[in-house]
Length: 128
Length: 128
Image (cartoon, rainbow over all chains, first blue to last red; front, side, top):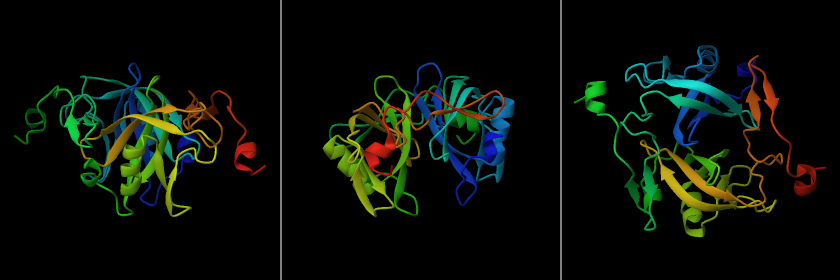
């Protein structure tokens, strides 16, 4: 199985890029361990390793914004993955934005937020 | 300047995703240090930190397949970058493929190479 052929780092993790299968927009860079890769492939929904919880968790478990897997690709060094997904709920970022990459570098080398959050993180995660 | 606001890891590096600005195809995941981020922004061509050389090098320096920068985006944790680029020469991968992510995960959970190399690595890098 391909998860046995991947190169995990010294923490047992591999970088995974999550990309909207339709638009091609890059939504998130996150980390998976071997268990998360296998579970994602089997479940056809994205699972990630959460260091803060010490276990794998389904992406969107709390917010409902799960990611349905369309395709998985592995790079030439087998130490990175692209997962093409359908984003349920429209927002991949825990800050409520569609993509985690919502800050654009301007011509003045500053960061400028693009667009608006699609949900209120405080309401969803109860930190408000 | 934005390169001072990024979160570099304990090796001084940040993950960068290189994406074709036209097609949206993810071409490479690579690592930059602060110097590489600044140089890339200033030069409008991609520079990477090469651990094997202990210094930053221009992407495509040897193969001619340089990457012209169109846009840079930073994620919510400021510990990852997306760089939208124009790929000169058509191939981003040192194995000659257009994208480093040329192995597709099949329905049998195996890896299957997609497409053909656009150049011969042995001829370009002199390892033949």
